[in-house]
Image 1: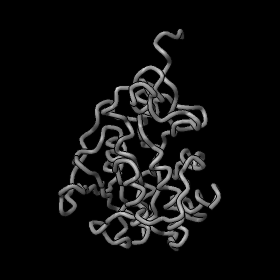
Image 2: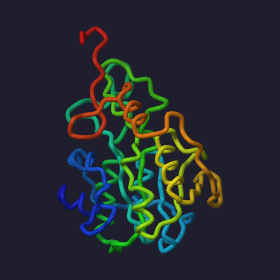
Image 3: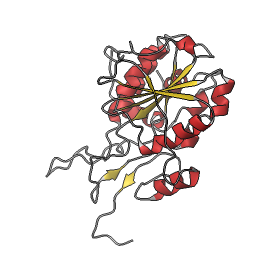
Length: 261
């Protein structure tokens, strides 16, 4: 498949959700390893509500798990919407330090990129309905919480904005009244995502959540008003220590501590 065909498989013409598909990783799809088979690219989704229940899913899952789960959901009738906004390590750069063996990129997104490429092959065989409910895909590792970024590292940590998602009004116009947050190893939404969920909650959407590591059934929950709630806070947060490129997405080299500027 060409780069354009891969993107079109995830953002098909006529879908109301296509406009929210982030093009950042698709622009670098040539970095994905070649594979003759898409075997093993689908996840287990026996927890998912029926697609005709008109539920918006938000999958905040680590690495490529969100993509593989999204492909499986597509086969149930959902439209997976990738919201990955971090650049991969630039081509021809080593993935790890020659001396220490430490990873150079703050967040490893190459497996996500490769899963998007393989997943497109499966999506091309799925006849997604134009009124399919969306399943938004996020990388739970996007903030690089456990990573100490050092000089000469590639800093591609990112956050999600409320503007990355449709409004509660738009979702309601599509007949959607419920949101299901899907996470692993935690119940509370991450700080950046809490802004979006709070807005949806204020817009009249009912919030539910499920943990794939143990919670057997969805449960209702409410999101408290985040500190410094509002779009301005998220924009300020993004400017503190994160590197965003002009063309969109997050990623840039940390300056050497000995360098000026």
